[in-house]
Image (cartoon, rainbow, N blue to C red; front, side, top):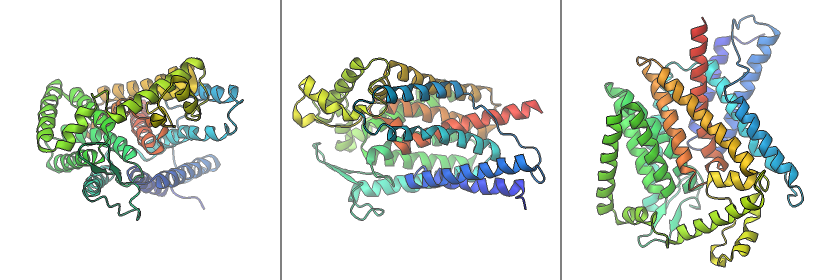
Length: 428
């Protein structure tokens, strides 16, 4: 006996909701619910092919609009792994991160299958959860207690600064993962705050959400995420109205100055961004130099996708980097990570993908009618969140962090699904 289409959509609706919740709390949840969403779509497709009784007319797009750039990216990454097999004994394992492609297609198909018109429940839960997480992060930063992990391992004590503090991680295992994820939550909340400024319910929900997100961002003390959310929020304000962009700049600068006077730790953290002698900055510069040196030795297809971290220690020695700064790992910069790992070819492929996604999202925002407030808010938030991801990528390897990358892909999928929805309506 076949399942009715409405039942499929109801199941998918709740699975998507649980997936969106897991994007803010759990990598295991991201993997689990994305798999269930994929399986549900496969069941729908199989039933549709076997018999259309009870399903009616449904459509599954064969392309999402970024297919060429994704194919280019996968090809470049594959070549980089295959041609450098002399020192990479586990290169097959490095193909597993490419499953993000499956996640992106799954989300686009799932969103367009359910339909994104006014899924208020999703956004209400998003605002409420973001409030709770922001306040929980503030609690972590002030107590050093992680209620999720009994050993408090995720809440780091920062001992490098003049004013020591705990670095909150929310429900994730690392402050930087939490910081760069919530840097994308902020523009989404801000977009609803601006678009629904005349509707009390959404104004209060989105405003409180944004406030708690910013409190949580302060609590993680991750400078790169502060930079990311600043530019993400600024882009949302400018795209909405130029005057709102100017207002945001004044408020942000004034608010930052007041916080700096009231909270010395915040002032020191901001000033440290521009201090070339700050310990973290010195370490980061050496990491960047080493990965750029890897790129120069492997200019076309890189040293092998995600394998450059295993080579970096040798390059520290070649560059004469003091042993105290031998921080073995990724490039702490998304763009250098792609350059060192996949060379100029892979870098161009990655830039083509993210630029294409951003332009498609921007186009969809500008052509969406003014009275479609919910869709405009989602699209505006998608653009702002994507830009926050890209600016955050200047100081952290965001595309290598699965939790951060998953939220980024969700923002792209939202915009693409809205695009399909509009195209179907225009075709009728």
